[in-house]
Length: 343
Image (cartoon, rainbow, N blue to C red):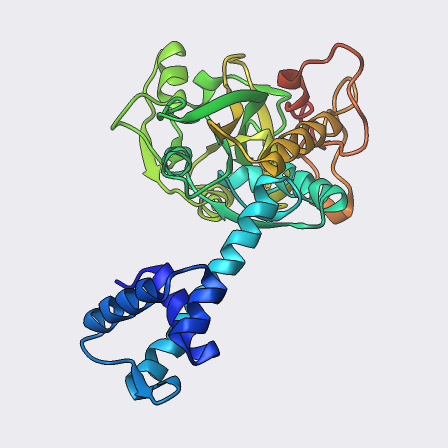
């Protein structure tokens, strides 16, 4: 491995054509320059300069290393500039992760708000399960994450702090032809004979398993599907039912309805996770996310059907325009409206 200072010295000697002139420019002694170039040539396994009567010039090996040295020094200079800008809070890259359903509505709304106020920040967004996101935060691969305690609790990691953003109600997705699709509230025990679409079950405690146990039954069958598109497809085909967070309401296809369940504990808590020393842009994104959640608060009372350009009827209609009344907590602001009963 070549040291950055040695590469910088190589470039300076090549530019000045002289050990003496390079020493003056870099504030070295001439003997120090000679020693460091000799050490660099030893690393390179041969001479890098032709010694001339008046000065030096690169030989073929020197030209090869010089070309790469210019690229390395340019990349390092760019990294220094980006880091300086980033830590000063004036821009740079921001690596953001979130679980799948957060990317449907609230994260895009928050990023849109951040782009308006901080166009100098370039966001790199990724999707992943909460455990993976927390681990990547701890490793320094992410600057910001939206995580939740669903389905198996909120993991922890050294150097990662979490703050509660909101509570998100868990609804049940049913095919429109289901016998309970017309109910305002569905009793969980009434679904005891259904198959359930669930990404994780049985290997550790889950929200669904706990809720079913409280209702006095165990699910007849678990179909292990992780992706929401697959879950919705199975439900639409009448092959099972699924718990769906209200944050996913905009993505539910027309062939399904979402209904509330009679277990009030069926909800998840959404959190913002940050490293111990968060970037200024990450803190601004947290505020933008809180604002996106507040603006999502539905009107009081049952929500009506979603507009035609936002999906079919039978899905709670999130509001992106109304702010909560004074005293509304962030936890309440994340909840979807009451699903309407189709005629």
